[in-house]
Length: 311
Ligand SMILES: Cc1cc2nc3c(=O)[nH]c(=O)nc-3n(C[C@H](O)[C@H](O)[C@H](O)COP(=O)(O)O)c2cc1C
Image (cartoon, rainbow, N blue to C red; front, side, top):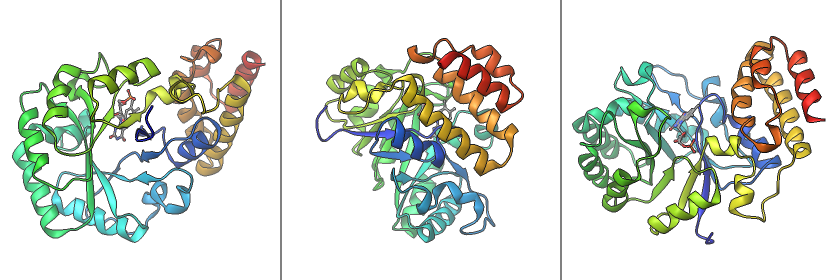
């Protein structure tokens, strides 16, 4: 890796909250930045409200973040910008990539990729009224890539801080492979700094990307940080190698932090189950019986299964 490469923790809604970001950085591997999972903006939202807890600077001391906002109107981005300024942020990210039907049916997330003139109008109004730094996170399109060229042309008209791209269509959700042939167009056409996001789980794939896109130096990793706990070690051997003991220190801290935050065992269990579906993809954790974990009703039960397999 060159010293100019930066590694970003991808936003994974429901997973990479500030507790995860902090403890991962502390116990598993350092990263350079993170985009915090989105918060939806609706009018009338209160400044500094608990809703923005994940973005509070005091919760993000170890790993600097760019907050992410879900919005489909310029006025929502402007409102977000003033709230985030109060919280100490001069830059934030607009989510234009979430593929969930609940989100896209309202023209939010990747839903907005179907309406390029609307993207243009929102950016136009935002930049005419605000001097905040804005970045965006996009996919290659909704159903197909026919609008990709006009999306890149539109984004090129505005002074975006950077453009994060997950090279899938919204209809692919998270399945199948990343569409590098179509991503070539975006990588070639975009004038902005690009942050690549998709399927980085090992150093070999990263090297292939670096050869194919020598102009890209920002690499975002999401699921790979969980399903390949040593991905950052593989990328840079100076990062610690994670064994089961080190993992368990991270896990125990994370579990206790979730319990303390939510004060509700059911919420903590739900979150931990989601994490385990990724963790068991690691060689060091493959003996964990995931079906039993997913059936657990209490943390005590879960702990018992985990400690029986990790000893
Ligand atoms: C469970 C889950 C939640 C996600 N939440 C967000 C989100 O809040 N904002 C966003 O821009 N992308 C979100 N993504 C997309 C990721 O940030 C990333 O772009 C995508 O997973 C591809 O990268 P990866 O293969 O390294 O995970 C999410 C993905 C997953 C699997």
